[in-house]
Image (spheres, rainbow, N blue to C red):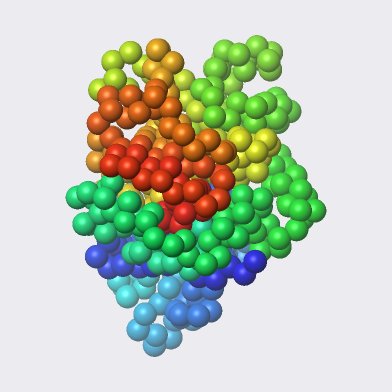
Length: 413
């Protein structure tokens, strides 16, 4: 399957959002950040690509802190791409010095893995000097070549009435090729290389190599963890727990290690974007589970079994959408799950600017909405969407909808 321009290109250079700041683009390994940056230089902009894993790049910087400008010539606009600079000592001071010294007509794009994302959160001297964006796995709308502006909640008017705007996008005929794109992503995940190769054999080899890269190289290089075999065993236990609140106590017993160690391992897996977690929503519900998170894989085929893959895929597409809505300045979007002590639960809750907006439930084939879900939506005061793997389903009422996954995901950025 051919992969064209990434959706992120439609907004990360929007002057209304970024001004003249540096652009940070972070996300999982092999999700396409470097490919995008190189294609940008090849197609649109004069500039240079500098990977700080390369000893020659580091040597050039030591000799001349502005080495990246030597080929600029008389170019009015110039783009310097710094890849993996976050692995260098004092990388934030390096970028601060560059940003404060170069002409604003020189744009700076910094790409990096989850470590860049983590350090961004810690607070530092770069605050006010960059705009941060995410690149996550491919979506249905992205492969359908839809612009972000066409997607749900990507216009200010959508935020005034999120439910009505979603219903308008769900209604009508499904675009041609929609189902084929969805089924392809369901099978191969959303990382560009296995999606583009479209081979089950390649996918299996890629998954093995990807886990080895993250757990044997990145985990070793970017953390102080020594018990890598225990981390590998932890990852092997996670697929069976996809969709359920994670009990750290149970995992620590299974792995025969301490509770703090398991919590740290789970945190490091999130830093590397191998996994991500959702917290339970607790506001306006009284007695709810407040502590245990749900953990999902960024590459949903790792979840293993069909029902878990489906829920995991939906989780990844929803967290991606929430990041796009936040990154584009539409508002603060969050993704949660809901589970009460009385046993009422919903797979996902989308919040907008800190308020519950829409409940989303994942079902393989069940087109009927349970009474418990309806009651939970009523208590939260939000509409409910039940997303099903089965094709050809669309049934909408005033405050509920049952819709096939390909149609629903086409509405998301």
